[in-house]
Length: 417
Image 1 (spheres, rainbow, N blue to C red):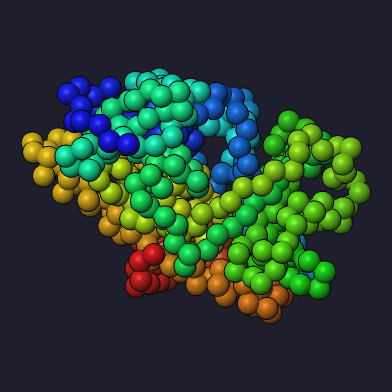
Image 2: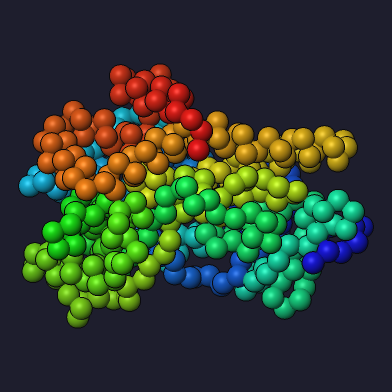
């Protein structure tokens, strides 16, 4: 819908969605001195489908925002335990200047609430139970001037940030659709009461079989530390079997094949099996149009190498906030618009080449035999696997060792996603 130009805004910036992307965006906007309204359709606490594992890249973002990760409920881990091809070994997170050397586990049942509360503590106005249904456009310019909610209310602002996830109504309302040439993943997970609830490593299984077919993806077992383990599968749409798979049944079969003393049984399941789509490699573009910026899943900011989304949700939120804050200091609408239009290129500069490498990777492992060859011949070589953990986790220093230099160079020369 369109409305006449607003004479007074309800906020400098409206952020729609209080997940990690929205809360990080709002936090950094408030830090810049802007009046921020954060709208969340649900009420906290709320559940969200996720592996609950946080890499050092995500930990860095939490530390930057001042989130207290030493409080009860945060479970630290040293790295990855990788299982596949008859091998089982542990890889510590790399020692880097840019990132901490540990990861975390925290369930999304309260993780999002913690990050949102941190934004509120720093000056953000949060409204829960507010479902945004469509953008409100300025009659003269066609720019977004606010949002309309399910109950008919209209909130106006100078800029709007869409952090409303994969099925973003705001992006669709502004004519931004998904790209079919980008990979998509699916994650399914549940929780079990299990002795595997306490572990110093995030456990990754690289062999997912559907009968005689090795699927592109991995299984995980992440101990939550409260008596339960998050157990799930992540699968890519680059294989011929993707559309015909029953993901929930695949997870049930995978769990039944685990050792009996892990107790991954129906009787010990503490939550239903739930699934979610994983939009990868900037599958919705451009990330800015007519006063609307996309952050996190709404812009497909999930790493195609490993399915990680939380770190990039918070990072894209920080980048968006920097661009918005700079733009609103402009003295004319034209100056403000020029600054906002730099946002898509800023994202491409930060992630475009790396996400392209990820696209090539998932296309390769979707081909029959490639995943099997890599599992059989790559896993026995510790040096290669240390390189792989840096590549797949996007964990490098700008001036680090040979691995860092190779990964950074490849990301730089690859065409931007």
